[in-house]
Image (cartoon, rainbow, N blue to C red; front, side, top):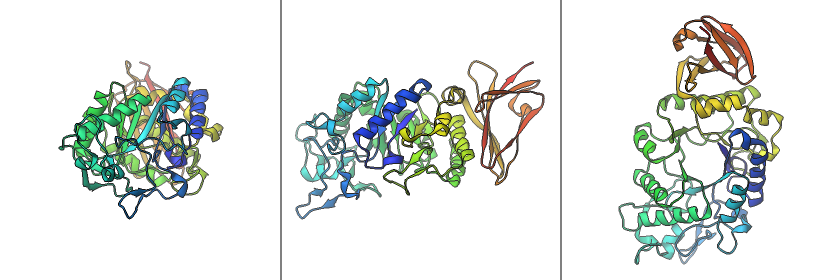
Length: 421
C-alpha cells in the first residue's frame, strides 16, 4: 500500500513533490496502512526537454547524458533531486521518507545504460570486466532507448546487478519496480534481480513491470518477485476496468503471502499533472466506477498503489482511501475467487481469516442500475446470515437464502457475510 509518482508526474517528478505526497500519506493515510512512497520513471534523466529519448552524437555518446557514477550505475538527476548533489544519491530523500515512518521506493529500467556500454564503464566487484562485455545489445526496450538488457550468462552480469542493489540498499531503498521485465518475460534477469536483492543485506520489495505477465510464468514469478503486473498500463477508462476483471480471473488462486498479482496503480484523484497520458484532470471515472475500481483491487488483493497527486485529494478521495473495514479485505482476506460473471453482473468473494465469515463484492457491469444478487448456498452458508455493508459501515440485516442490492450503473458493493445459526 502506498503512492507512486508516475500517473501524476510521468518522468518529471521533483523532490519537493515527492516530499509533499509523503507528508500527505504520513498525515492522512499512514494510520490506515499506507506506507510506500515510490519515485517512478527516469529519475536519472534531465527531463526539461520534454523528450524521454536519448540521441546519439557523432562520437557515439548519448545526449542528454544520464546521471551516472564511474561504475555505470544511474544516480538521481540533481535538477529534479537537489539533495542528491555531491554523490549522495537518494539517501537524503529516503531518510526524509523514513523520518515520517514510511518506506521509500524507486523505479528502474531493466538492464544497463547504453551510455555505460559506450563508455566501457568498469563493473564494480570484477577484475577488468566492463559494461560492453555484459550487455546484450540485441535486447532493447521497445518504448525507451536508454538501456540494453544484460546477458546473464556472461561473467560480470550478476556482479553488475549486485552492485546496483548494493547502491540502492545504501540509499535506504525499500522497494524497486523493475520495468521492461515482464513483456516479454525475461527469466534470467528476473532471477538475477532476485539474487541481487537477496545479497544486498536489506529487505527490498521486488515489483516487475509492465504486463501482461504471461500466466504460464506464474511459478517463476511467484518464486522471484513480490508483485507482478497482470496487464499493461491501467488508466481511468471503464473498459480498462472490465479488462482487469478478466485478467483477475486468469490469475485467480495464484496470489499469496509474499507474492501478489498487481493490477497497476489506482487511478483516482488528480492525474497527469505533467503527463504522461492526457490533460491534467481529476479521474475520468464516475464516483460509482471509482467504487468498482477500488472494490475489485481490494477483493482481488492487488497491491494498492495510489497514482493521483495526493495533496489535491478532495473529501471523496480521502473517503475511498481510509475505510479500515474495506482495507482489511485487501490486507487479510484469503483465497479470492470469482463466484460468477455474466454480461451484466459479477460477484467475487474471499474468506475472513480465522472465522467462517465471507467477504463478497457485487459489481454491476450494465449501463443502468440493477439488482445484483448473491446466493448464500453457493458460498456454503446455510442458515440466517447477517449482512454488513463495508463501504457504508452499516449492518443491513439478516437474510436466509441470499441477498440482492440495487447497484448504480458501473457501481459495486462490498459486504461481509456472517452466519448466525
